[in-house]
Length: 180
Image 1 (cartoon, helix red, strand yellow):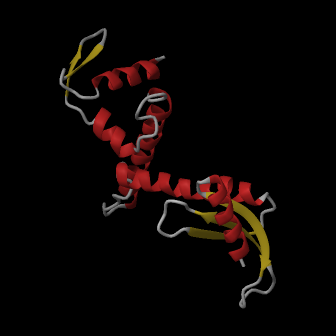
Image 2 (cartoon, rainbow, N blue to C red; image 1 turned 180 degrees about the vertical axis):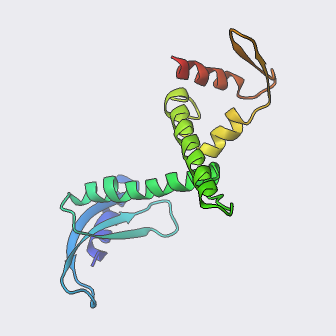
Image 3 (cartoon, rainbow, N blue to C red; image 1 turned 45 degrees about the horizontal axis):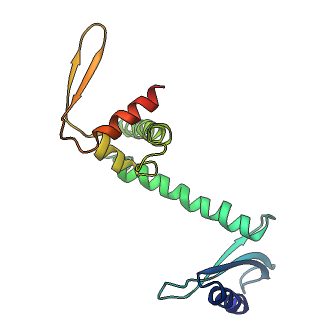
């Protein structure tokens, strides 16, 4: 059903000398369906890929424009799954091996709190830096999981990082941006 649109995307790609994509829609009914449904089609021709033709299909009942539905709604769903994976792998949200339910619940809540804090560090503290889009585990490894001497007295707390810490300047920039 998408062959004509894939041909059109290939022609557009050849004319523009870059990859091209089209968003269309069609009514379709699989044999087991009781009625036709709206299917959004992304017909894409990838110039530098070994599989040049890249069709994608999304069955939906939403009435948005095909491009907006695919790009802003369907792809955003995949991004949400990436954020869940980031929390599970980078902040150990999948470690629920305690025998008691409440212990596992507490671990998950602490992991969620850590994710919210890391996300704030990324959005505010690392804005405009090379790590502004870094994964949670990268931020944890390069900025937080660093040896330091902590000196505390009644008026202040001081962190003394090693002078050979490769991301020391980035650490202090993020701290300054978070403070104020």
